[in-house]
Length: 432
View 1 (tube, rainbow, N blue to C red):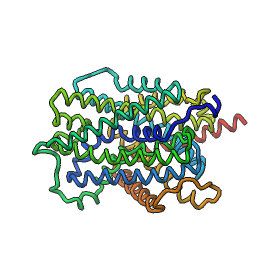
View 2: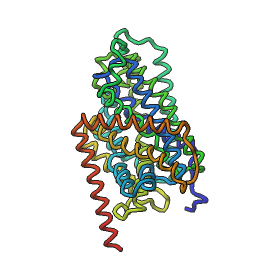
View 3: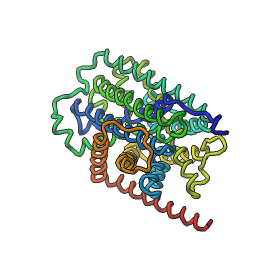
View 4: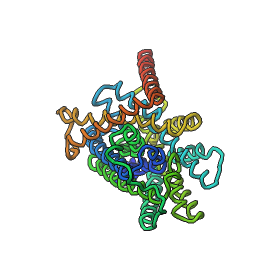
């Protein structure tokens, strides 16, 4: 298909991809892991507001770098151009191995947890969901765009209704709302930094539109709109959702639990309505899986264009990287069969935070390099970039120092990526 007739997406579809990528497992599952160490409601809400500000800072930065470079591929493309091909390759390797496959696996696991909570048990439901949605995205961009817009619109509408009802209803006297502890002593602890990793993971996806820059009608205008609008909407919804969960469920019912949304709904409504809301929450995660199955293979497809080792993953005649879609699906299913929810979340969060921080730092390099064209300029430069980098450094240091097993996984993953880079160089040398 020629570039003149190829279907292109609007900024609204880009924002839908951002929203769908962001509103996934984290917002409905991570509160239970935060509560053992952080009990003050203000501290919890600050976690989500800080995470939202960091995501917005990242969105400003990615909009600038993305419009300057003007190519799809996200961190793989950006870091290859700004730093060195090997740095970009490792970022691409992270995307191939865990960046999208792990969040897809987590969302699928969460759907299973929510349906089990409802008393519905379907063997291998998480695996079947990944297979079916991968099929949807194996046709063409128009079908992907239609499916994504519909599923994301339903998701946002449901959350707005859920929040509105939660604000109107009176919570139980023994709710998890708690102001007895000191905010000051909680936010300057290792536990708060680790909790921010969970929150950071929940906000993962604010950069999603940058992976498909070339699929926009007008990337210079549409990419910033998609990134910023999507991030702002999600930050507001996230903070309100956490307050609703705390307002309507007791502490003991939430702590250490994955399906906190379903638990809160159980206290808000009669059993049949609670089951309906639990079912809706699980259906919302389909939109998240869809967005990541759409976006992730675009990175591996780009790597297939540049590296012989991954040539089999490049997009076909319809510009759909079908082999990359199914390659990612296989990795997601493997993670479901071998990993645990919390382990995957922390391990994935560390690597993704590192990649994103390097792109944000790249704004300083882009602005100093006069060879790059002037496109979108992020507001408040360099304030937002410094804030993002400081928060990222804080999270990475605490996570690496306090989670040795996840640290080992991360180092091993990067080492494997480096090995494949040199294998590719050898393949290219043999074919010259």
